[in-house]
Length: 127
Image (cartoon, rainbow, N blue to C red; front, side, top):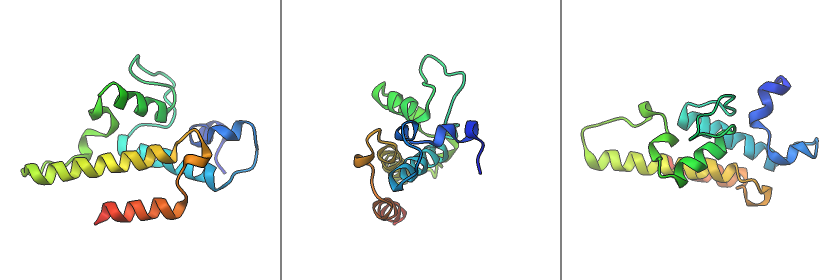
């Protein structure tokens, strides 16, 4: 079992008030893992810069709102194949992955996708 401090960044906001996990809280945690994979950043940043936030989903949301799109993914994730069209497809896939991760991290549990929807979106991206 994860230590309480280690699990902190993965907990859905509603787990502060309730103790039992649910599919919705698991989807939130999955969204955090997807954001970690995309960005290469930890779920909790103890020393955020002025452009960042303590929590990864908020930091990522702010990056998009501030049009700092390069901040949403790790620079090594975008492979330069030399072809512009292939690169734009990769960028589109990265943005779809980001959208899925952020929907999983919605503050409102009822707005989060269910696991079947997540799997379907990931399969679509893999085609």
